[in-house]
Image 1: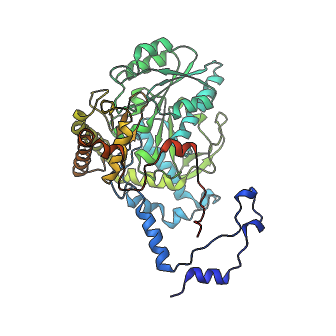
Image 2 (image 1 turned 45 degrees about the vertical axis):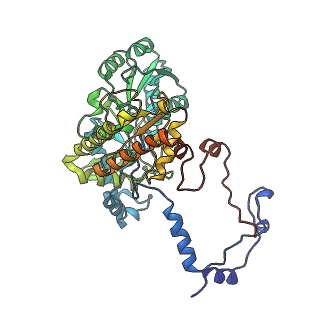
Image 3 (image 1 turned 135 degrees about the vertical axis):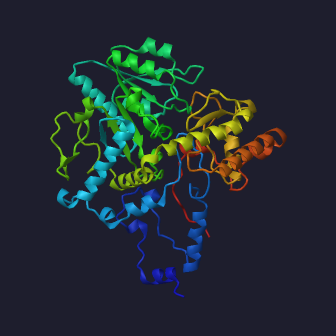
Length: 470
């Protein structure tokens, strides 16, 4: 057998790092690059063993609340890899890219039907960039109306991107507290709404996994005030084919394609977002727009009110292919996605609610929030680390921030009853351990080396690899 690294080392001239033209500080340069003297089977086993340390939806349950970590059907991957899609050059003339333009156009049409909106832009690279686009549109819309609106209303349960987006666009954020039912406090909202409020930004269902009960009244007050209603559609997985945000009174909504429409999630990308708007905001959407005329598709750039481009070319096309494949695979049965997601969440909630403090004891939508505060400070992080010993990924913890010792759990529609039962049994076992053998939980995890300090890791980054000294 050829020793691949021996061959490499004997046939390659090594240049010390300090002789290379590398733009690095001197203290970070190495004298040489040490290569291990291993054969092929050793290197294969090394990387295979590393791969086993990864955790993903293909290996087990991933109950991250708000993230909608559901299974990505492989048929979507197969379609996205078709040569006509994967090999398409972004500079290809539209006459040679009719199929790709049709994919974008059809996905926009599907999302218009799902949301009830009049127009969709698929340029944004993520839901957060959709938010930025939506607030940019609102800013230009009111500027053209000569209205000086400087504030955006956001509930205190919102995703952190909401106030961040407002700040990026030079708006002041007004935070409305949550009432004892888990809704945005309607009385506080009435106190804050005024002619200086440009947008009311609401997640529905909210990040507590609850439908906003006062939404009809909120949107009516906002409309009378001339304020735009923006829906953070991160939780659209609860509404597919059941309720349309436009019918709930929203003027704009963003969708996270990686959450609701099962495209790849995590790893920094590639991402995909969709922003839907009502007709009176359509001309502000980014250019180019996709135009269909006599079964021919083209780019339309002549939009004077447009806020301009927000992404190179036309978004992340491979993600759009996957999303359209997912939607078409469900067809007119798309409501079953949300029906199963809501059923799974309420079933799991019913199994766990008696073991925790429940901040808002209502029927949930697609996710729910529990509190471990009754077990003491830092109980949530201890429970989360112990969960990993049982082969599950931990749920989202300490979010929403308004719930002390929060665990936010979203089972999605792709999990079976058997998986949910096993997860609930695991949680109950851990609760029993907290009472009888607390050190098993407080010292977890036991199946992986060490107990990481996430706060220290975030503040004291150490990303440089150094070879072991012999």
